[in-house]
Image 1: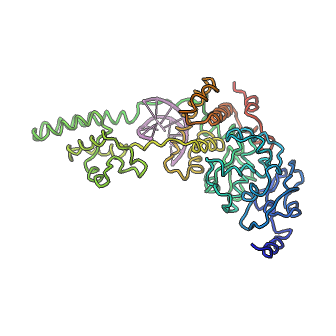
Image 2: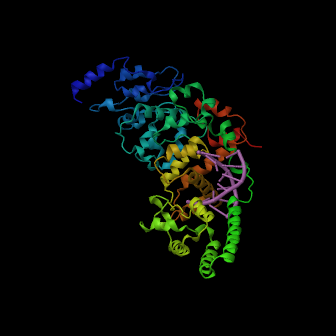
Image 3: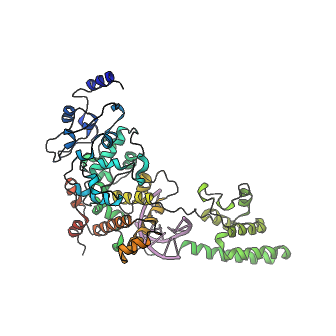
Length: 466
DNA sequence: GTTAGGG
DNA sequence: CCCTAAC
């Protein structure tokens, strides 16, 4: 954009050009509209940002926003801030909320003295390029649609004002943020009107936090308070025993009527298969699989191709000798339960961080939400995987708690892939969710939504379980 | 369809 | 990671 174009663009902006509400779903009295960031002339910024009742030091307005030569038509708040606004220029009134995060990612506190509090702009988004787990925004020059910008703002507005100090974290870009939330039946009821406008609804936890009614009611609790479901003998156990007995009776029937020379071989193979019914495979699958040489993963796409073991292939070959004699029950069993095991994929630290963010923002047990919103790109992580990983993280964090932290950390860093900060975050999250269980109705969090951020300790003291 | 928990 | 009861 050359100078002339730039000037004409400025003029075309005009005083009324920027709708203050364009980025906020509904401006709250004490909320700072961030639309002003779209302007970069100081007087316009002042006009664009409501400063009445805003308890923030909008230091950014007084200082260097230098956008020269930048095509602002393609910029938005997220693009502009990290680059063009000096970190120290955006001051916050409750910068303590950042501490955990900064610790987590290993930055000096001093390096991030300035950022607007979570009610307004969140300069912490500038950490996107550095934070592996939020790596979608690798390029800050990426254009972000207005909707996405809204999502960011919303997430900052809501998530950032929780009562849990490590809660406000930068979010991944929510590709389908709004759509996904619309699907949530419960959120409409639990959300105040200003969060359900424009179809942008937020998860219940955004509003009431981990102590919310929905949190408690929906998953019935976590941690020690969770009471376990009672289990009957598994269906698989019943099925297998019934299959065994059925096959035995069939075999007896065949043995009494069929050709004995032929059946003896079949019986031998069958008895082998009965020992390990899970590994039994119908013969037609074999011809099916021959072409790709990895018979055991034929039903599972790509990612499991490494998972076939020689033992299994051998077993498969064995089955081929048994030919078409397999009974239909066994075929169905093989088809449905399958012998393929998903290839093990180690969880990366960034994945774990994403998971923690998901738990932070949506709550323990909202695995499908987390999956849809944060792991939509990783097909190999199912909601169950997330749940399992969370369970393992809890175990790991307790293991860490049990030992002396410093020594253990130093000693185990070589083999333990998870940084201590992550395990600490797990513990914090866990404690929050444990302590939030006895809460009847999430009034406390919703009340304090736009108040200052409480520390986990304060949550605990507020919500002492019996 | 989703989640918890045992394996 | 799988499986399945419980929800």
